[in-house]
Image (cartoon, rainbow, N blue to C red; front, side):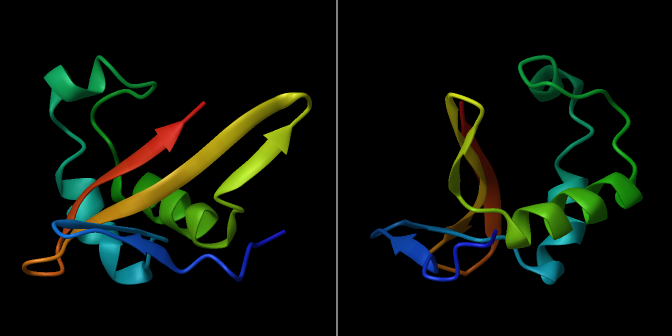
Length: 93
């Protein structure tokens, strides 16, 4: 169930917010870096279709939900305050 009350957590330099459809291209563009991928649970290459599915799921996922007995923070986008561009994402388990 989506948490419609969550819009974002603003900071001076970064805004943590939900993903948006326009984030797909920038999100997919940063994924092929094998050095970054080795510390995350994904493979390279990262096809655009996979990025589209991920962003679509994150747009409606509750940003802090419980799966079984384990609290999981879903992925949220990080946007630079200076230029409003996607600068990464965050998730916590």
